[in-house]
Image (cartoon, rainbow, N blue to C red; front, side, top):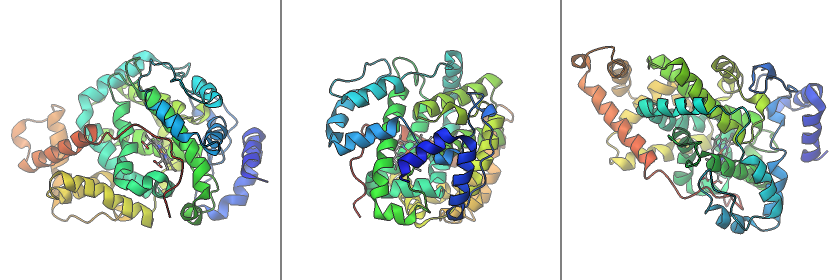
Amino acid sequence: MDDLSRRRMLITGGALGALGALGAASPARAKSLWTWAPSGSVAGKGAGVDPDWVWDEEADPVLAAVIERGEVAKVNAALRTWTRNDQPLPDGLPADLRDFMERAHQLPPWTDRAKLADAARFTTKKGIYTGALYGLGSGLMSTAIPREARAVYYSKGGADMKDRIAKTAQLGYDVGDLDAYQPSGGMVVTAVKTRLVHAAVRHLLPQSPGWSRTSGGQTIPISQADIMVTWHSLATFVMSKLIDWGVRISPAESAGYLHVWQVTAHLLGVLDEYIPASWDEANAQSRQVLDPILASTPEGVELTGVLLDIVAELDAGLTRPLINGFTRYTLGNRTGDLIGLDKEPFWQPLISAAWPLLVAFREGLIPLPLIPQAAWTVEEALRKFVLFYLSEGRGPSIEIPDANRPS
Ligand code: HEM
């Protein structure tokens, strides 16, 4: 059976079909059985099929056809002019792509504008924390997610890793824009373009010898489960760290932050039955899909080096040990080891002691004199890093790839 018909069978065949196929595939994969129930999703119900066997039924055939017809350059040229949520789709798109995008750029019916506003307020207040967590937490954790590291490494963008590595974390910042989902914002556009890129990658990567050699038996990359893994490395991880650090978050801000990520997942093509309805459900799903798969790969270690070199360029390497120390503090030593971060016997204990004090001060819990000088040094380095992402880090517009990384 070819991949497409197998996929169709699994999507329509319900849980039994999925379990059968999972059994057949499990020797190639170290992962737990999918037991997360669709009753915990924004849809509240669903077939319960393992999302590892679901990709993007709507986008994938359209992007495969665009690539096969040699229309990628034409489509990219048209899409460059499409930047705002309230803009109509640009002229010059092939009819099948236009039809798909007309549907794909609608906000889900369950969008709650008040919650989106709460999320924007939250990011305005806590930007330094979320910025540091996206850039140094999620960004570096992605290199310990084997499927993501390898997909990025062997895809076209992998040839310019410095440009590429910043981009998933970048989306985290865009999600926090004040007007992200307002008519004047750009998140609908960014998410839909990303959905197109992922669909193109699903068509292209299976043709890459490097990817096929290392994919651990997966025949099509970027399943719905994979997308949720990355989603948790962004949203769920950031929220759990903020709570760990004792950052004050009101219930409305917490719900708003979740909501903005729920809407983003929907626009990225994740089925509503896989999008967690609450933080409790998100944490449960994250424990099932993200925690067990973190691992070291040569591709991930190389990507880590590239990301840290970006940091080093900001200040001739002066703060690199400090950034290593902060990242180890944030991600933990296990993940730090997995991605090949240097151990920092001086900085790490110092940061572990100073950072909670700094947060407590910023949250109005302790007075200024209790803050050690080192805490300000750490904060200043993080601020630089976050500003880099927010300004120079912003690359050119998102482009659909037409080939893999040259091997
Ligand atoms: C491209 C974000 C999940 C692999 C992109 C781009 C963005 C993005 C913004 C466009 C970058 C550009 O400007 O070229 C996200 C988000 C995800 C997610 C927010 C989940 C919430 C994944 C997963 C994988 C993956 C799970 C693989 C397992 C890729 C690859 C590219 C890409 C290979 C294309 C790189 C290239 O050739 O340029 N993603 N991504 N992504 N993403 Fe994702």
